[in-house]
Length: 312
Image (cartoon, rainbow, N blue to C red; front, side, top):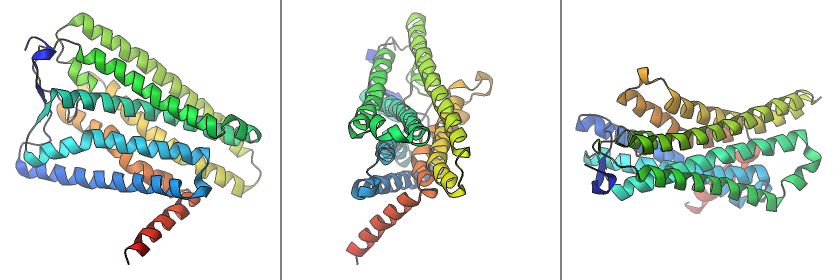
């Protein structure tokens, strides 16, 4: 294959060699996918329906749940279909769409997590100006900026990656299309280095966001520890710790996926790591956020009770 235009489909990495193990992966992915749909769907419904949750923190959480639903729906259904029908193929257009959507939603989610750290910083360290700095208009603007940053980043990387001439076959060593695996198929060193340069710029921006999140939480925890009442400290921690847990899961799995030493890289390990950063977080984020948040627990109970009563 001399270039990308001659490729009509890519071959994704199979989870297993036997049909029985393929079906096992299908059921595991189906359970994870349904858990993500249920958990994020309940959070979106609870926040939308309960007026007490119409605050900046929950507005950003609603956006996070939407991004989680989108990101897991980009990768898992195709992997489930391939496992069920024992195939590996994905069309060129399907691969391009998967590449773009995953980058878009992944980038927007990281930007949103940065915004959520700023929200907690203002709420705890500068509460008197919270309504001014994060009013309804400001919240819409920063959320839109997070989505827009993910969109523009994805557009740049997808267009640049798919413009590369590909001459090393069409087998992608991953269960979904992602930039590092597509780059391995490139036969142009200059174009390859150009995309690597774009990725390094993106990594620097991501590192800047990470530093901002860390510094925000250093100030937050210093402020929380100065709160005189134990109840006040507990309430402040209950709104911060879930976000810290989500950021830690998101960043640690992403860093390991893209920065692990080549010496330990293998198709099986790449597959496991990809599941950890692309599939697990959208499924467990709703659980993390609802565990220590009593307001969200109460709203979720109301939604579940309402659904149950309607079916009785």
